Length: 115
Image 1 (cartoon, rainbow, N blue to C red):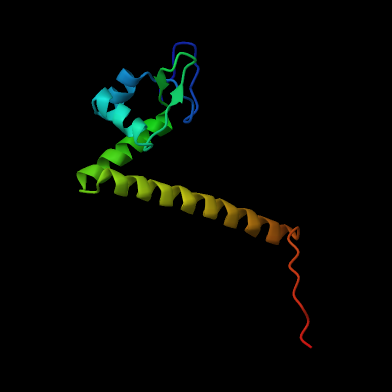
Image 2 (cartoon, helix red, strand yellow; image 1 turned 90 degrees about the horizontal axis):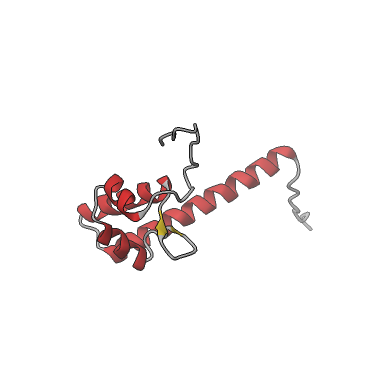
């Protein structure tokens, strides 16, 4: 992530790059980014006028889509892989949360007594 002349560094998820810059950073054509957006593989931010704005995270995701494509995975397969990776991330976060609650004693588990 680069710092501009004011010293400002955008967050990884801040949509700051126009499509031409994002395409150049990802090493792809802008039309490829439009296709990925249309298929729901990458969802960039939008300006009030509807222009796409990509974050550093979006560009990393575009690169991952391209890597999977180069390995022979079709776009529908890539979409499914990305969905599963997001689900795994959600589940890991939930597991971490439950583990933190368990350690802190905030999680109370009811266990019936044997009869």
